[in-house]
Image 1 (spheres, rainbow, N blue to C red):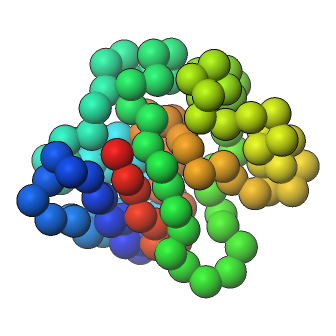
Image 2 (cartoon, helix red, strand yellow):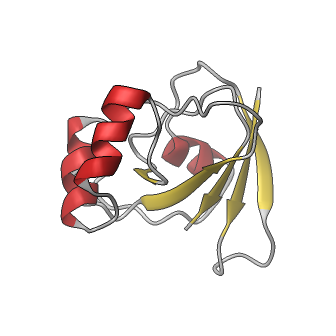
Length: 115
């Protein structure tokens, strides 16, 4: 079980929801199921409209899912991540702060999602 806290100026206050780790739902699906107003358009990682900043609140090494090829391309072109962050994600398992909500799978760790 993971606590996912959504924070945005669009909302009156931060909202924390529970996500079942390993159920393969995306962060966007978790937001939609809980009526969190995360922006999205295509839902398949090509437009970048669902870019969110993810911070790990749990202690220890972050367990964020690997970047999909779509995420690497879209986030790099949007200027959200650079070559070094992509290399760190691939070689050192250090996830970058910016992710696409439609591609990010919630893991068993507490996270803060800013959008």
